[in-house]
Amino acid sequence: ARPLLIPARRIRNYSQQHPRPTERHEDEVVGVEPAVSRYAIGASVFLLGGLSYYIYSEFGPALSPHLPWGGSEPAEPTKAEREARETARRQRQVRAQMAPKSDLTAEEQLKWAWTHPGLYAIGSNEFGLADPQHPGIFPGLKCAVPGLEGRLIRSAAFARTHAAAIDSSGSLFQWGTGFAGDAPHAPRCTLRDASICEVAATDDFVVARDRKSRIRVLRGRSAADTEIDASGAALSFEPRLGWRESVVSMSAGRSHVAVITDHGHVYTAALDASGNARGQLGHGSDAIVPTLTLRRIESEHRFASAACGAEHTLLLTDTGDVLGCGANDFGQLATGAYHPGTTTVPELAPLARLWRSGAVRPRDARVVDIAAGAATSYAQISQGGALQLLAWGRGIDGQLGNGTLTHIQGTPTLVPALSGRQEFDHESQARRPL
Image 1 (tube, helix red, strand yellow):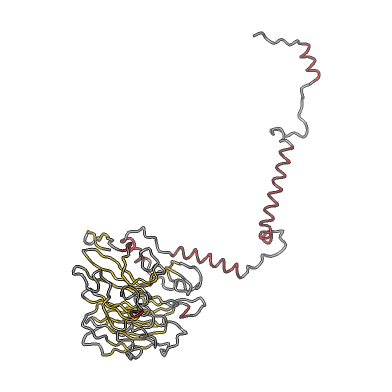
Image 2: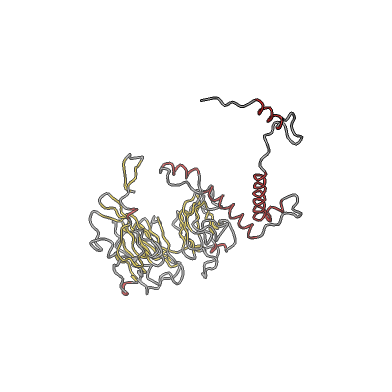
């Protein structure tokens, strides 16, 4: 390639027309690059202005009272704002008190429980049963009941509007809006007796059992129409307990109670006029049974435990059979398909559909435990080295645990999630039924 030749005369003429600056302008700053384009400056000003207007329109009224140029003192928070702040604070406190999740082993959970004594409640707080200091809020609450932290709880019972618990020293605490009203409150100690070992709750009452086989009834709902005064009343036995006979367990329904003795006897009592309206005492619906009197059910069976629903009673014998009496509107006495003639069973009778073969128990099977809800019944059966849980009765809200919503279930159905399970026993170093 040939070099480009430019005449020296043309270079000299260009230098004369465009002299090189010898000094900086007065408006330039040493060490600063050339100024930004005026178009960029305009765009930046426009953007900052729009951003300032948005911030002021959104947060100006809330921030202006707190700024030095606001011109007024901070406004007093309204009642709704104070309640919202208190709710948020209480939620943070509740989360800190929650029990750990079940990812802990059984041994770790046991150690945690001993280092965090108290009573933990799960469920609705509509009537202040989970948190009596804030009744009516936090549906589905899971927390330690305030006022019972650090106490070893022997027994606890929950009714719809009130609850009760006994600690290791024998102090009986009661709470709930049905007991103390709608105002925030703490569990109140209503009875002190070191011999108290078990408590049960009905719609209107709290029933306490002590080691001396005394059964006492206290008011659970302050508005209850009853002859029982604030100090409570003791139930009498008819006939009296035998020589060295003592009460070992009890259960309570809506307005009746059943107790089991170590001699295998069962006593039932009505706590008000409706306590035997459906024959739930086992003496017949037409039997005249005075209230607050524990009357023994004459039977050839020896009973091991009792479970009371709202208006029905289940009794477990020492041989593994189950008998029942009372209301059967939803099939809670396992009589099979619904029939108008079986809605009430006034006297003790074997559960006709408890076993696949009918009321006759198979030789290799036996019931080891029973429980009852308001109109639902449960039985844990041991058969062939495995434990199975059966449920029957009212299941429209999922009480049966079998994945269905059944209004009336007169035949026991298996609860799959709680049947045939096993756990490892650290003492025996072997698996055992759960």
